[in-house]
Amino acid sequence: MSQWVNNNRGIVNIKIDIDTCTACELCYDRLPEVFVDRGDGIPLVMIKVPIERVYEKLLQTAEDCPSGSIILY
Ligand code: SF4
Image (cartoon, rainbow, N blue to C red; front, side, top):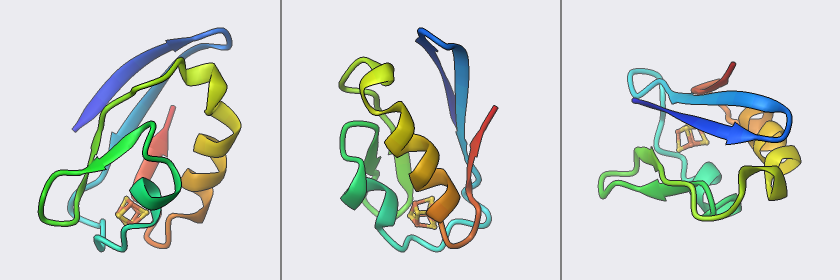
């Protein structure tokens, strides 16, 4: 699943690899402005604020995802 997001740095695509995600809860615990639990521990991308406001935190969260399942490009 993925979602295109406009921000002042251009466009970032956020993709969750649901085949490798371990449902560890880190992303939506840390960044509920961007990720929500779809009900089984796998995150959905649901942007609730202007992405530039959480962009640095998004980069860090993607880096910290233990299975590397948050792909930004
Ligand atoms: S941080 Fe990574 S492994 Fe954990 S729930 Fe989010 S996408 Fe899945």
